[in-house]
Amino acid sequence: MKKTYLLGALVLASLPAQSAIIKDGSFYDYVAELKNLAFSKNSGDYVAPTAGQRSDFSLLAKSLYDHNWSIAETQANFLGYDLIQFNNSTTQDVYWGVAEQLIDGKQSKGWGSYFINEASTSNVTIEVTHPSNDTNTHRLGARVFERSDANAFAMAGSHRSANGYQTANPTSLEYSIFQEVHKIFNGGYGDSTAWQLHGFGSSTLKKFPEGTDAVLSDGAGNVTNELATLDRLLEEIDDNQFGTSYVYNLLDKDDPLNIQVNGVDQDGHDPFYHLRAFNNPQGQFSRDAGVNFVHIEASYNIRGSRTKRDTYFANAIVEAIKETSTGTAGYVDDGINDIPEPSNAVFFLASLFILPLWRKAANT
Image (cartoon, rainbow, N blue to C red):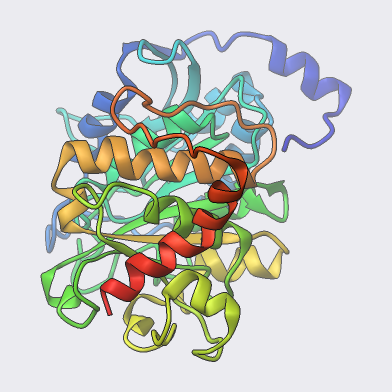
């Protein structure tokens, strides 16, 4: 949620940015354009930011978070970025953000792009850390951001191994522009909860129970309200569109909470520790700041299908955000993902617990 503004900041925030680049259209498509600009693996093009640049970008992130567009414009230009006013034709929302200034159609740093929903009152940030690695997570992120009324959207600008193995990976580097923005939006200064989107491939899938389509974690082995809610909503999806969701945790196998999210006889640690995100610096910072962190890993079965990804899976995330976050007024795509209404309240309440257990038991 927004912090209390100083009077001077309020005045500046009310002034229009004089040379912001105005873009109209689909934010979903614009994010795809930004993703295509990301530096590729072993390109050697990623520029590791200096301490001074990280500090300057932190100030820029503050200005964005506080809606101080005029100040943000000056700060962005100094860092080789443009201030963007994006008028999203899909939702009629206005997003303000920053993207790299292009030289001959190419970016020069690989630091990522960051946007704020001007009208949002929610406490949620959607994060895409590996747009070049985790196929279609940028599309999933854009769709969830649009529909959830999230406050902010953050996407990295390089393959995580742009200059060699893990040299540009924001989820393993202690110092990165992505981390500086996260620190402003999610704890410390801002208080948004980050919902970070990832993907796992077939080699990892082989380690999991048959039908695993999602592995959720808070990066510390806890089963938070966000994780339990999202797990329940994913399990409600039709079997033809989604398999099974699991929550990594350190609870005893027979703990009722582990049984709720993972089913009977399924340990929450093994084999899901591959995706536990314990060393994720965004999660570590958020927890230290007293803010929850939601780490979502989706299979390629989901990410590779537009219907499964952008409708069913995205709807579940949006609904989970609406149920667990403040101020959200987003929407789901009810035209495709209709869940039949229960015949009575008793069946509805029972289904929240019994149906997920039955489905998970069938996959163990």
